[in-house]
Amino acid sequence: MAALSQMDPTLLSKIERGSRLPTVGQLSGLAKHFGVAEDEIQAQRIAIDFLSRYGNHRSVELAVAVIQQSLSRSETESTSQRSEPP
View: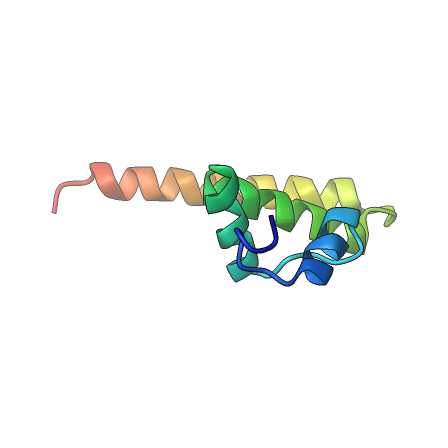
């Protein structure tokens, strides 16, 4: 599988064991290899990175709520801009 995903076998092993997160470029190759949407696998990487850094912090739920609000606001603004006449 390492050859198919154009990745060093040692690096791939570390990624599989969870001792290393793949880079954006490596994830792109893995997504293609497994036939998974690149956005989906990138989202998983972001979530894993966030949780590994802040998962034990007492304010993590509040931080997630702030992110959700921000994304919701951005989506609302984007939708309203598309529906406004030029």
